[in-house]
Length: 323
Image 1 (cartoon, helix red, strand yellow):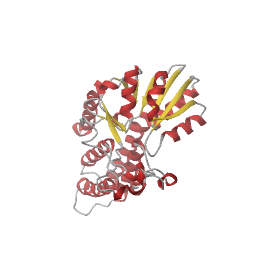
Image 2: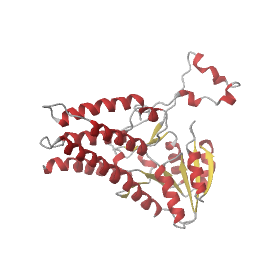
Image 3: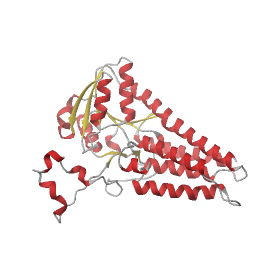
Image 4: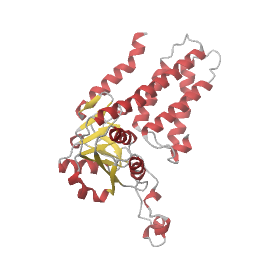
Protein backbone atom coordinates (compact mmCIF):
# COMPACT_ATOMS: atom_id res chain seq x y z
CA UNK A 1 0.00 0.00 0.00
CA UNK A 2 2.83 2.39 0.84
CA UNK A 3 4.40 1.88 -2.58
CA UNK A 4 1.06 2.38 -4.34
CA UNK A 5 0.53 5.66 -2.50
CA UNK A 6 4.11 6.77 -3.12
CA UNK A 7 3.85 6.00 -6.85
CA UNK A 8 0.43 7.77 -7.11
CA UNK A 9 -1.33 4.53 -7.99
CA UNK A 10 -3.80 5.33 -5.21
CA UNK A 11 -4.70 9.01 -5.55
CA UNK A 12 -7.30 11.26 -4.00
CA UNK A 13 -7.87 11.93 -0.32
CA UNK A 14 -10.88 9.62 -0.02
CA UNK A 15 -9.21 6.74 -1.84
CA UNK A 16 -6.07 7.01 0.27
CA UNK A 17 -8.04 7.18 3.51
CA UNK A 18 -10.17 4.15 2.64
CA UNK A 19 -7.12 2.15 1.53
CA UNK A 20 -5.27 2.95 4.77
CA UNK A 21 -8.27 2.10 6.93
CA UNK A 22 -8.64 -1.26 5.16
CA UNK A 23 -4.95 -1.92 5.76
CA UNK A 24 -5.36 -1.04 9.45
CA UNK A 25 -8.28 -3.46 9.63
CA UNK A 26 -5.98 -6.27 8.51
CA UNK A 27 -3.37 -5.21 11.07
CA UNK A 28 -6.00 -5.29 13.82
CA UNK A 29 -7.32 -8.67 12.69
CA UNK A 30 -3.86 -10.26 12.54
CA UNK A 31 -2.61 -8.69 15.77
CA UNK A 32 -2.07 -11.03 18.73
CA UNK A 33 -1.81 -9.39 22.12
CA UNK A 34 1.04 -10.70 24.31
CA UNK A 35 -0.03 -12.49 27.52
CA UNK A 36 -0.73 -10.28 30.54
CA UNK A 37 -0.80 -7.15 28.38
CA UNK A 38 -3.58 -4.64 27.67
CA UNK A 39 -4.86 -4.91 24.10
CA UNK A 40 -5.43 -1.19 23.54
CA UNK A 41 -1.87 -0.22 24.51
CA UNK A 42 -0.14 -2.97 22.57
CA UNK A 43 -2.35 -2.50 19.51
CA UNK A 44 -1.72 1.25 19.44
CA UNK A 45 2.04 0.59 19.50
CA UNK A 46 1.69 -1.82 16.56
CA UNK A 47 -0.46 0.65 14.62
CA UNK A 48 2.03 3.47 15.21
CA UNK A 49 4.70 1.48 13.40
CA UNK A 50 2.44 0.94 10.38
CA UNK A 51 1.35 4.58 10.39
CA UNK A 52 4.94 5.80 10.46
CA UNK A 53 5.82 3.58 7.51
CA UNK A 54 2.96 5.04 5.44
CA UNK A 55 4.02 8.57 6.41
CA UNK A 56 7.58 7.77 5.29
CA UNK A 57 6.19 6.64 1.91
CA UNK A 58 4.19 9.84 1.47
CA UNK A 59 3.31 12.61 3.96
CA UNK A 60 -0.22 12.17 5.21
CA UNK A 61 -2.92 14.67 4.39
CA UNK A 62 -4.72 16.60 7.12
CA UNK A 63 -7.84 14.48 6.51
CA UNK A 64 -5.82 11.32 7.06
CA UNK A 65 -4.48 12.87 10.26
CA UNK A 66 -8.09 13.25 11.43
CA UNK A 67 -8.83 9.62 10.56
CA UNK A 68 -5.76 8.35 12.44
CA UNK A 69 -6.69 10.49 15.44
CA UNK A 70 -10.18 8.98 15.36
CA UNK A 71 -8.80 5.43 15.06
CA UNK A 72 -6.41 5.87 18.01
CA UNK A 73 -9.27 7.28 20.08
CA UNK A 74 -11.37 4.22 19.30
CA UNK A 75 -8.50 1.88 20.16
CA UNK A 76 -7.92 3.71 23.44
CA UNK A 77 -11.64 3.48 24.30
CA UNK A 78 -11.72 -0.28 23.76
CA UNK A 79 -12.92 -1.85 27.06
CA UNK A 80 -10.10 -3.83 28.69
CA UNK A 81 -12.48 -6.48 30.06
CA UNK A 82 -13.62 -7.63 26.60
CA UNK A 83 -12.10 -10.79 25.08
CA UNK A 84 -9.42 -10.02 22.51
CA UNK A 85 -11.31 -11.34 19.50
CA UNK A 86 -14.46 -9.48 20.48
CA UNK A 87 -12.57 -6.20 20.89
CA UNK A 88 -10.89 -6.61 17.50
CA UNK A 89 -14.22 -7.36 15.82
CA UNK A 90 -15.70 -4.23 17.36
CA UNK A 91 -12.82 -2.09 16.12
CA UNK A 92 -13.13 -3.50 12.59
CA UNK A 93 -16.89 -2.88 12.67
CA UNK A 94 -16.30 0.73 13.76
CA UNK A 95 -13.92 1.21 10.83
CA UNK A 96 -16.56 -0.19 8.45
CA UNK A 97 -19.11 2.19 9.93
CA UNK A 98 -16.77 5.16 9.56
CA UNK A 99 -16.06 4.41 5.90
CA UNK A 100 -19.75 3.85 5.15
CA UNK A 101 -21.13 6.88 6.99
CA UNK A 102 -18.37 9.49 6.73
CA UNK A 103 -17.22 8.76 3.16
CA UNK A 104 -19.68 6.66 1.13
CA UNK A 105 -22.97 8.06 2.45
CA UNK A 106 -21.40 11.50 2.82
CA UNK A 107 -20.48 11.55 -0.87
CA UNK A 108 -24.01 10.52 -1.80
CA UNK A 109 -25.45 13.35 0.28
CA UNK A 110 -22.99 15.84 -1.24
CA UNK A 111 -23.98 14.71 -4.73
CA UNK A 112 -27.65 15.30 -3.93
CA UNK A 113 -26.96 18.71 -2.33
CA UNK A 114 -24.76 19.82 -5.22
CA UNK A 115 -27.21 18.64 -7.85
CA UNK A 116 -29.89 20.87 -6.31
CA UNK A 117 -27.62 23.87 -6.99
CA UNK A 118 -27.19 23.10 -10.69
CA UNK A 119 -29.73 24.90 -12.85
CA UNK A 120 -30.62 24.24 -16.51
CA UNK A 121 -28.33 26.18 -18.83
CA UNK A 122 -25.53 26.55 -16.30
CA UNK A 123 -21.92 26.71 -17.44
CA UNK A 124 -19.93 24.96 -14.71
CA UNK A 125 -16.20 25.20 -14.24
CA UNK A 126 -14.25 22.46 -12.48
CA UNK A 127 -10.54 22.34 -11.73
CA UNK A 128 -8.39 19.22 -12.06
CA UNK A 129 -10.23 16.12 -10.86
CA UNK A 130 -12.42 15.67 -7.81
CA UNK A 131 -14.28 12.36 -7.65
CA UNK A 132 -17.33 13.67 -5.82
CA UNK A 133 -17.68 16.59 -8.28
CA UNK A 134 -17.33 14.19 -11.20
CA UNK A 135 -20.03 11.87 -9.83
CA UNK A 136 -22.32 14.82 -9.12
CA UNK A 137 -22.02 16.06 -12.70
CA UNK A 138 -22.85 12.63 -14.11
CA UNK A 139 -25.78 12.27 -11.69
CA UNK A 140 -27.15 15.70 -12.64
CA UNK A 141 -26.88 14.76 -16.32
CA UNK A 142 -28.84 11.56 -15.68
CA UNK A 143 -31.55 13.66 -14.04
CA UNK A 144 -32.01 15.47 -17.34
CA UNK A 145 -30.46 18.80 -16.33
CA UNK A 146 -28.88 20.53 -19.34
CA UNK A 147 -25.55 22.18 -18.57
CA UNK A 148 -22.05 22.56 -19.93
CA UNK A 149 -18.75 21.92 -18.14
CA UNK A 150 -15.41 23.65 -18.58
CA UNK A 151 -12.57 21.50 -17.23
CA UNK A 152 -9.53 23.56 -16.24
CA UNK A 153 -6.30 21.66 -15.81
CA UNK A 154 -2.72 22.37 -14.79
CA UNK A 155 0.37 20.65 -13.47
CA UNK A 156 2.40 17.79 -14.80
CA UNK A 157 -0.16 15.08 -14.03
CA UNK A 158 -3.08 16.69 -15.91
CA UNK A 159 -5.67 14.85 -13.82
CA UNK A 160 -8.43 16.90 -15.45
CA UNK A 161 -8.04 14.93 -18.66
CA UNK A 162 -9.31 11.77 -16.99
CA UNK A 163 -12.27 13.68 -15.56
CA UNK A 164 -13.10 15.15 -18.96
CA UNK A 165 -12.89 11.69 -20.55
CA UNK A 166 -15.29 10.19 -18.01
CA UNK A 167 -17.92 12.93 -18.10
CA UNK A 168 -17.67 13.09 -21.90
CA UNK A 169 -18.40 9.37 -22.10
CA UNK A 170 -21.40 10.00 -19.86
CA UNK A 171 -22.75 12.44 -22.45
CA UNK A 172 -21.99 15.72 -20.68
CA UNK A 173 -20.99 18.61 -22.95
CA UNK A 174 -17.54 19.71 -21.86
CA UNK A 175 -14.60 21.88 -22.85
CA UNK A 176 -10.99 21.38 -21.80
CA UNK A 177 -8.53 24.18 -21.20
CA UNK A 178 -5.32 24.88 -19.34
CA UNK A 179 -4.95 27.19 -16.36
CA UNK A 180 -3.29 29.97 -18.37
CA UNK A 181 -6.54 30.45 -20.33
CA UNK A 182 -8.59 30.84 -17.15
CA UNK A 183 -9.42 34.54 -17.50
CA UNK A 184 -10.47 34.00 -21.13
CA UNK A 185 -13.16 31.40 -20.35
CA UNK A 186 -14.28 32.68 -16.93
CA UNK A 187 -16.59 35.32 -18.43
CA UNK A 188 -19.07 32.65 -19.52
CA UNK A 189 -19.02 30.62 -16.28
CA UNK A 190 -22.06 30.68 -13.99
CA UNK A 191 -20.70 28.49 -11.14
CA UNK A 192 -17.33 27.05 -10.09
CA UNK A 193 -17.21 23.61 -8.46
CA UNK A 194 -14.09 22.63 -6.51
CA UNK A 195 -12.90 19.61 -4.59
CA UNK A 196 -11.07 19.79 -1.27
CA UNK A 197 -8.22 18.13 0.53
CA UNK A 198 -9.15 19.86 3.79
CA UNK A 199 -11.11 22.77 5.24
CA UNK A 200 -9.30 24.70 7.96
CA UNK A 201 -10.79 26.21 11.09
CA UNK A 202 -10.64 29.75 9.68
CA UNK A 203 -12.66 28.73 6.60
CA UNK A 204 -9.60 28.38 4.36
CA UNK A 205 -9.62 25.71 1.66
CA UNK A 206 -6.67 23.39 1.08
CA UNK A 207 -6.76 21.78 -2.34
CA UNK A 208 -4.64 21.04 -5.41
CA UNK A 209 -2.17 23.71 -6.44
CA UNK A 210 -3.94 26.15 -8.74
CA UNK A 211 -7.28 26.06 -6.92
CA UNK A 212 -6.67 29.45 -5.30
CA UNK A 213 -6.12 31.08 -8.70
CA UNK A 214 -9.39 29.62 -9.99
CA UNK A 215 -11.33 30.82 -6.93
CA UNK A 216 -9.83 34.32 -7.00
CA UNK A 217 -10.52 34.70 -10.72
CA UNK A 218 -14.11 33.56 -10.21
CA UNK A 219 -14.45 36.10 -7.39
CA UNK A 220 -13.31 38.90 -9.70
CA UNK A 221 -15.85 37.84 -12.35
CA UNK A 222 -18.66 37.45 -9.81
CA UNK A 223 -19.09 33.69 -10.25
CA UNK A 224 -20.06 31.77 -7.07
CA UNK A 225 -17.54 29.18 -5.86
CA UNK A 226 -18.93 25.94 -4.35
CA UNK A 227 -16.54 23.62 -2.51
CA UNK A 228 -17.44 19.94 -2.10
CA UNK A 229 -15.95 18.59 1.12
CA UNK A 230 -16.83 15.77 3.53
CA UNK A 231 -16.91 16.88 7.16
CA UNK A 232 -14.20 14.41 8.21
CA UNK A 233 -11.79 16.65 6.24
CA UNK A 234 -12.53 19.61 8.50
CA UNK A 235 -9.55 20.28 10.74
CA UNK A 236 -8.70 22.48 13.70
CA UNK A 237 -5.52 23.75 12.05
CA UNK A 238 -5.16 27.29 10.72
CA UNK A 239 -2.83 28.29 7.87
CA UNK A 240 -2.31 31.67 6.30
CA UNK A 241 -0.20 30.52 3.34
CA UNK A 242 0.83 27.36 1.50
CA UNK A 243 4.52 27.57 2.40
CA UNK A 244 4.43 26.73 6.12
CA UNK A 245 2.82 23.35 5.48
CA UNK A 246 2.70 21.66 2.10
CA UNK A 247 3.72 18.51 0.27
CA UNK A 248 6.55 18.54 -2.24
CA UNK A 249 6.06 16.61 -5.45
CA UNK A 250 8.73 15.13 -7.69
CA UNK A 251 10.65 18.07 -9.23
CA UNK A 252 11.23 16.05 -12.41
CA UNK A 253 7.49 16.31 -13.09
CA UNK A 254 8.08 19.97 -13.97
CA UNK A 255 10.67 19.05 -16.61
CA UNK A 256 9.36 18.71 -20.22
CA UNK A 257 8.70 15.21 -21.53
CA UNK A 258 11.22 13.02 -23.32
CA UNK A 259 10.23 14.33 -26.76
CA UNK A 260 11.03 17.90 -25.70
CA UNK A 261 13.90 17.16 -23.34
CA UNK A 262 16.72 17.17 -25.86
CA UNK A 263 16.07 20.73 -26.95
CA UNK A 264 15.10 22.01 -23.50
CA UNK A 265 17.39 24.00 -21.26
CA UNK A 266 15.88 22.12 -18.33
CA UNK A 267 17.43 18.82 -19.42
CA UNK A 268 20.44 19.35 -17.17
CA UNK A 269 18.80 21.37 -14.41
CA UNK A 270 20.47 19.31 -11.68
CA UNK A 271 23.86 20.51 -12.90
CA UNK A 272 22.94 24.18 -12.38
CA UNK A 273 24.13 24.91 -8.82
CA UNK A 274 21.74 27.78 -8.04
CA UNK A 275 18.62 26.21 -9.56
CA UNK A 276 16.01 24.26 -7.59
CA UNK A 277 12.64 23.12 -8.87
CA UNK A 278 9.76 23.53 -6.40
CA UNK A 279 6.73 21.37 -7.08
CA UNK A 280 4.08 22.23 -4.48
CA UNK A 281 1.09 19.90 -4.57
CA UNK A 282 -1.39 22.05 -2.61
CA UNK A 283 -2.34 25.66 -2.07
CA UNK A 284 -4.68 27.51 0.28
CA UNK A 285 -7.67 29.61 -0.74
CA UNK A 286 -8.83 32.32 1.72
CA UNK A 287 -12.41 32.19 2.95
CA UNK A 288 -13.44 35.44 1.21
CA UNK A 289 -13.09 33.78 -2.21
CA UNK A 290 -15.43 30.88 -1.32
CA UNK A 291 -19.19 31.21 -1.53
CA UNK A 292 -20.49 27.99 0.05
CA UNK A 293 -19.23 24.60 1.22
CA UNK A 294 -21.30 21.60 0.14
CA UNK A 295 -21.16 18.89 2.84
CA UNK A 296 -23.25 15.92 3.93
CA UNK A 297 -24.58 18.19 6.70
CA UNK A 298 -25.93 20.62 4.09
CA UNK A 299 -24.74 23.64 2.15
CA UNK A 300 -23.00 25.90 4.66
CA UNK A 301 -20.94 29.11 4.51
CA UNK A 302 -17.20 28.79 5.20
CA UNK A 303 -17.73 30.65 8.49
CA UNK A 304 -19.61 27.59 9.82
CA UNK A 305 -16.60 25.29 9.63
CA UNK A 306 -15.71 25.80 13.34
CA UNK A 307 -19.24 24.71 14.30
CA UNK A 308 -18.87 21.41 12.42
CA UNK A 309 -15.42 20.84 13.93
CA UNK A 310 -16.76 21.44 17.44
CA UNK A 311 -19.73 19.11 16.92
CA UNK A 312 -17.49 16.35 15.52
CA UNK A 313 -15.14 16.64 18.49
CA UNK A 314 -18.06 16.36 20.91
CA UNK A 315 -19.47 13.37 19.01
CA UNK A 316 -16.09 11.60 19.05
CA UNK A 317 -15.97 11.81 22.85
CA UNK A 318 -19.57 10.66 23.28
CA UNK A 319 -19.00 6.86 23.51
CA UNK A 320 -16.40 7.29 26.28
CA UNK A 321 -18.67 9.66 28.22
CA UNK A 322 -21.54 7.17 28.03
CA UNK A 323 -19.40 4.40 29.50
